[in-house]
Image (tube, rainbow, N blue to C red; front, side, top):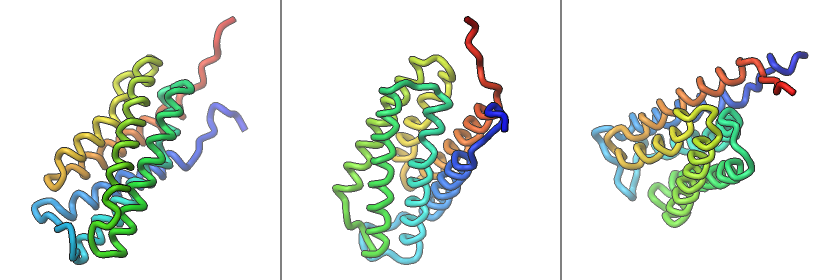
Length: 181
């Protein structure tokens, strides 16, 4: 099989999972905030959908880093952001089981790790010069998602991951560049 035409199904599926998870999470709270404790069905939908989105980001980030052609530091930032998103997913599942916010410090640490890792990825993506317009998008999406909160923030984050999935697929379809000696 020709390596320039081979594609992995993981990046598009991961980005799609992230996009759908975040859109569902965001739609579940627009106009109807969920309290910190004693959740109903909407609280469970919110947290489980957000967990799916966070795990989709964790699975899809390496493909984004690859499409940005970042080096060792950028891949390290990617791993930090992946760990942060997994922590966010763990907190969401634990909170769903408990019926309210349970592992607040895990969420905060996961969010900080995600933001720091995505910041490193953004800087390294900008430095690589491959796709400068796309490099800060994961970080900006998470910042907007957090800042907008119950006003559709997660929906915006879902749209960002839909766009990133398309970016990765386009990058995989492009022929590999062969350096001229």
